[in-house]
Amino acid sequence: HPFHYQRVQQLLARDEQQRIYFCEGFLAQCRQNISFPDRILWTDEATFTPNGIFNSRNFVLWQNENPHAIRQ
Image (cartoon, rainbow, N blue to C red; front, side, top):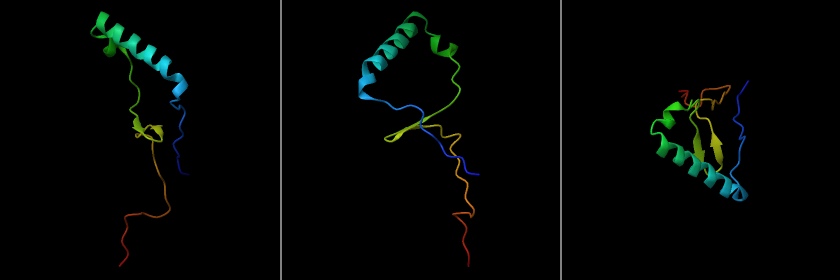
């Protein structure tokens, strides 16, 4: 069975101020404690695209045939 990624969060213009507050808070924590980012458990890496965000480690496409196979 194929695994399809699903966007679970969308960046909306109405959330801009909340994102700014979050970033300002994060930077304030970093100024108070230079090792603050080291105390965060970063569990996944994500790729940001114009169409949204997806976790590239879990982005898997299953196919019935190898798309790179060559038949001669």
